[in-house]
Length: 428
Image 1 (cartoon, one colour):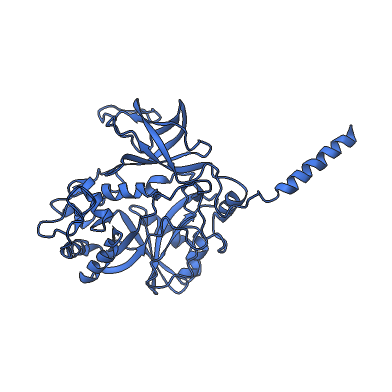
Image 2 (image 1 turned 120 degrees about the vertical axis):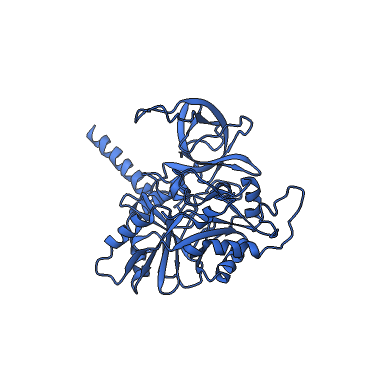
């Protein structure tokens, strides 16, 4: 996992070494102001991501057979697609941002996952005309809204441009569907427009500087509204934002991330990832049976929700904290942030049957003392709880827009039941 050159900036504050975003800056100043700048399209962030390249004439058809997404339609300059790699049981093993330039298919995954992805893909090549390589020479920068175009222009100006991926979240892409049946409200990510720009890793600092130098816009306002924040001296229009600010806006948008929201048993339906990363009518791929069966015959066992946390206590839960309905554990927190407008927020996976209006609490646990040797299975000490209100992303009904109105075979099952009853009457 290569560390971002932006960590060498004098104003960059690092993340903890064990954090999933340890390879990029956490902040450059005040994260809340950085959120304002990101939301206004006036800031750029370095993302903790790895890049894998696939070349060869069979690359698109090959990845099409391995992933959840339709790859064959990719063309240069189209902004790419999002795809998942699933195991045979439908559990998510990799989440990929995919973009093709006509010769090379670039796959963006979580930092620290690139080698494992490249090794897996290499093991699946067989006799196909493809080559797989881990690209440590490529880094990922990102911006929101109009900042995406400005960041791409800066990469080109620095002669470091590689490719652009446009995040489709939270739209429903061709072949996808959403798990929001019964949720009568706009999606919280309706205004989320993220652009990832792939650049030469060694030149990431130059790209950032070119982005800053392109500033000069006036602040949107001086009354605390979203506008310029954290800009470098002499460059009032644009600034850099750390991972803390980026994550806050991601959580606000209900956007799932593999490194945070996925565990060993997660299926795409639980995270509403059929919106952007699954094509329901493409050819076969590993895990497709689970995707189709859950969509048509069942309901996801868990559901992703945004939690608005009580900010008056001043206490924040940690990822993994238990979510409770009364005394009953009904889920776990996956991401925790402090939002500039909404205060403490989280994403959490709950049991699907938890009512959307259920009064929930989240455990606050004591920070472990490094001098104490904890037992491997020892539960952390719960010192408090904070109230939490849901903003559901996946409906408790557990049905997608593309789910059949009636479970296939339900009528046959009823007729069979009546036949069985008649048979029992004859035997009496």
